[in-house]
Length: 524
Image 1 (tube, rainbow, N blue to C red):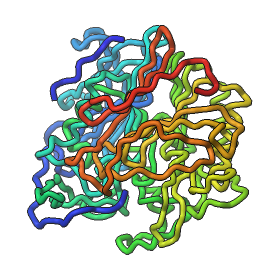
Image 2: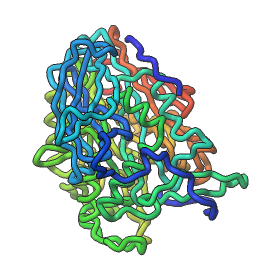
Image 3: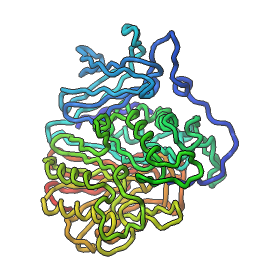
Image 4: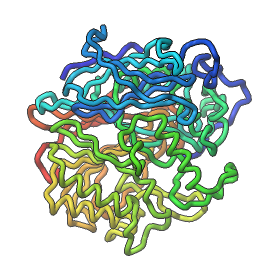
């Protein structure tokens, strides 16, 4: 593969809050949208691309005032023979954000693009162009595929700390020149306010950039939008966004901790207790701040499959929108489960249609790790596994149905990638160790957090026979990014052999664990 140089570059708050003043925001980014009669539109929040395929992609931008979005693409940085794409009018109804779809792109090529923002009343008046680049998926198998994944950004009160270098993990990910970044959810912590400072266990101080919208839990649409803008204050993230396309999914913290449809909150921090109301506002902000191919559809769904050439299909799951209520998860029948019947049928159908060598199932929650939800004082379950090592119960029933389907349809090359638990690990699932045996072996790899508190390892549930082959996790809860335990994963698919190599990495890029998987197998 050719390499693009990267330019030089869960709900507890540990530690006491100091009373020092907030760090000041960059002037261009900290101000509200300007409705000045003079001046030209500015795109101070950078650019992003998303859901890139062999011949298409989405480009995102945010303006500081009403503007017409224009995208120009070229094979070279000089923008000679540029192609022009006319995008939407950016206005207050979308928080001055917009996305333009590019079609008919050449496969396996580096695309240079620039976004211009034009005055709606005078198209000749444009702001300074903002540039970016991305690589389309190759239609040729021999070119290979490389991508990175992680999740969990700005959680537990650990925000952008300039003294720490901000979200510096993005520099290590970008240095690998990935074709794309898979973000496995918790892109924001709408339920996690950011304070000016936190006292660390050694007595030193962690200092955060702060904003008004991050001073409380998000309830209004404006507050959810402010949570997404907060992360874009980080120059490492903005630079990464301009260089690496993303495939984005969501999990709970885009709304509130451990949420499910129909929930009524008991959390005293919230005036709005109806989670469905909060989720609708969060979904709108989510759709405004990320370039996602399905969110503009009438059904507005997050789950989708992104085709990345002959080697790879990425199946993006949504384990939030269709789930049943969190409970002890020990019921003997559960048609709704964590995916909902419609999404499960969609996933089975798309997996059976896929002709890609590898089918990555991007799961925002792990399968065999017991993730509890004790927010209301009850021993409820947040993810799939509930700790009973016997036959599948509750949400495990849907997963058992899916695993059985993969086996009997002889669907090859499935690999599960996830985040959520704030440590990194590799689990191998094997029928000979399991209570439920009607499936073929498979791997699940966990990574994260990107910049959030790190937590001890969760226990394993033996229903599907997991063996923890590797783990790195702290022994205490909510270790700050300064204490380490920030992780991302890399997947490298060789174009000649078809081998898929997973590397679990620390925030500086150090490889902790490597696993090579062979193509063409139902199980590994």
